[in-house]
Amino acid sequence: MPERVVVGMSGGVDSSVAALLLKRNGYDVVGLYMKNWEDDDDDEYCSTRQDLIDAAAAADVIGVDLEAVNFAVEYKDRVFADFLREYSAGRTPNPDVLCNAEIKFKAFLDHAIRLGAARIATGHYAQLREADGKFELLRAADASKDQSYFLHRLNQQQLARVMFPVGHLSKTEVRKIALEAGLPNHAKKDSTGICFIGERPFREFLSRYLPKKPGPIVTPEGKTVGEHIGLAFYTIGQRKGIGLGGKKGSSGDAWYVAQKDIARNALTVVQGHDHPLLMKESLAALDASWVAGEAPPSLSQHSAKTRYRQADSGCTLLRAGNGEIAVDFDQPQWAVTPGQSVVLYDAEVCLGGGIISS
Image (cartoon, rainbow, N blue to C red):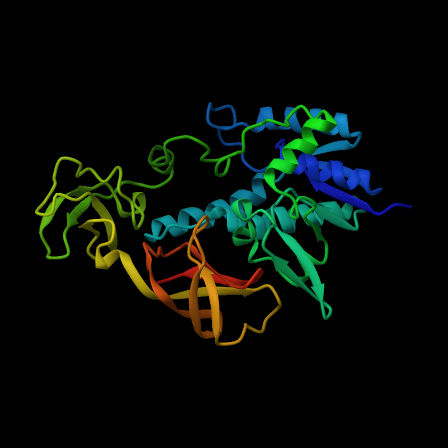
């Protein structure tokens, strides 16, 4: 009997080609469409209905069955509740990281095992390698599409059951395969962000769930230059939407959010993209998770990202124990943001990371 693999089919071209390649390689492929949000999925900003139609059309061409599963309750409990807690505390979380760890590679994996699957597969751009009985998470071959940053919290038990069939391909190659196979979504635009936000105005969405709590906007010298609507609605490095567009200040440069003072409910802003308060030579992180297991990597030179689509920066891991991380960077990093993830690498190997605390 061929090995059964359940493929998470989102309706996009990447997961569709993942299913196609596995089918061609002789696996018993079952498609699974995950519905993770339903509060306002008839809204103009949420595409779940069309995505399911696209996934079903692709599955039909590939010749695999497609099951739709609703994980909205799990998503709300495990991901969205944390998302709101973090914003309420003045941090800026990355829900995609938590969604991968809790939904796509936990709830989905558990469901697939109940369907008799040996493994699951997704359309993520990442690669795996087995070495000395351990699984390593590697960057994708297409550096511009690499998604290892979002997968850094996956553990050995999860990676042992995972396949990334498009990780060795470029996006151009994936679209070419889809076109030649006649997949109807071969030219579908890539999704941006997570469904519950989509393309909608972010501040409008957040205000549905979090109260506004106005306070002063101040300069580092303590001068009040405006009023914010609530610290939760701003992030470090933000330039647009601060409400100071007409106030140029002494330098005439644009304003940027630099700090949040939770105790005073004050938002500190600075002028100029490279203001010293926006540059950090070190950071601390909590809730560390290491791909190789409990033991952290060696306290030595690595590279790191403090946000997705950021070039790697050389760094020294100074502390890694009790779930804590301390990192010194070779070069100052711009707008290091509490709540986001710092992810460490050794060359192409993703080591893991933690949630930036300061």
